[in-house]
Image 1 (cartoon, helix red, strand yellow):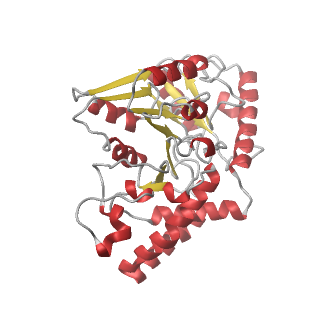
Image 2 (spheres, rainbow, N blue to C red; image 1 turned 120 degrees about the vertical axis):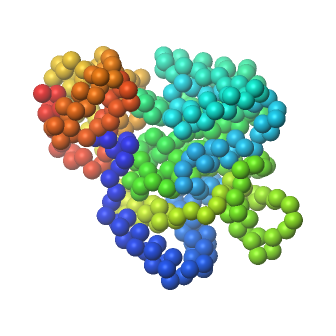
Image 3 (cartoon, rainbow, N blue to C red; image 1 turned 135 degrees about the horizontal axis):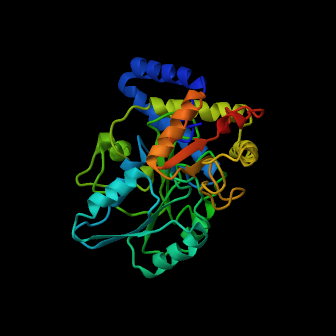
Length: 365
């Protein structure tokens, strides 16, 4: 039940890794023609289809989302004032980077508290509209609680034009249905294959608004892939995803992601079906929990806002202290239940590889 951290990989990914090895070994440098001409466009089309994005060529790839987000941050002139709006519920990667940036005298960060979640949309949007920010960043589903940021996509649609906005979609991508069509050219959206797609580490993406003219300071030679043999003087940028491209990376994760996407398509496994299936298991978990009257697993300790419409695919319980959370995690491990925790918060995840007849009573006894 730690699938929000690491989804188990479908067997099809093993053949995908072998396919990548064969291509790299047999094609050598010409493998780039296949990767950039066939594999990447296929992946981009699949991501665009899942997220309802109109321009697949605007989906930038990298080994992790931190690389993509920092490349975006490097587009700002850090000799000038930089104001950043975010929340206090962002993942460590971005949160740590902001703390380091704040050491610069010209960088100011405002963190809107996520709780109470019911008023988060109003509080965040008011600050976004009135605060004169160059960058705004918020998660669609918060990593520490599993709670969906209420109305975030609607807020993004109304954001000031002068503010670049990033939505961290990692805990929503391939878990909850997401339609970005209305804000495709207004925000940057990041996610990857490590969590709910179940294709492992190393394949992340960021959708880039059409018409983007930012010039990242952090830029790699892949950004010149289209003009590599006729390289011009100076630093130019293309008008597609290559604007945010980096440098040499291992593309076996791309092959794995494509294998999982093909598997799901062949078996008719859609994000809507995944979400419905997981929601059903979550409801059975809650019913068993309510009956058990457990001292820690109960509604009073469960972090939630809207379990039916506003929650991700894991539950987070406030255990009172890191010690109590650690003890409960060890008790579950002895029952052959794998979960994880973040200090005093214990997280239990749900996935499509949990049988529909799974019983949860043993977690509470």
